[in-house]
Amino acid sequence: MNQGIISRRYATALWMYALKKGHQEEVYAETKRLCSNFTQYDSLKRVLSNRLLTQEKKIAVLSMIIGEPLSETFQNFIRLIFARSREKFLRTICLSFEMIYLRENRILPAKLVTATPVDKSMEQRFIQKLEKNTGQNIRLETQVNPSLIGGYVVTVDTYRLDASVSNRLKQIKEKVWNTLA
Image (tube, rainbow, N blue to C red; front, side, top):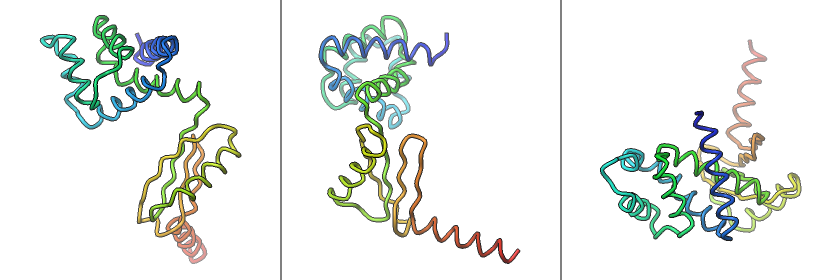
């Protein structure tokens, strides 16, 4: 069976279960932390698929990696994953769950990259402008990249606005080269 189909089915089941229990926020936070740890710890996938480790030891590893004990809702779901030998899909299940959570809560992730750190009031202005234009709640992630020289780059879904000084200089350079050629 296709990995995407399996992941979406399990993620949907987790969403329905978390919704029934009223723990969707908590499970979202756990799946988000777990996903980020999959990229940090290459060996995590091998540990989870190790047949010599018991379910409880695997859950203890996940709790240790997440940094706190797993919620009962998420633990029950993880036990189901282990019982069905779907450990290798855990990362993509978590990613699919995050997508479901964001869609159901009408949250649109956005990324703002600037040359220098921005203050909270500037972040709020970006969020308000983006929410007004998209009609959705914006979850803004900020990043600093000094190579932009100045300005900003904002990415929302598939839309990207590059209003950086480095991009403008690049455009000017290309224009000059095209006129000389």
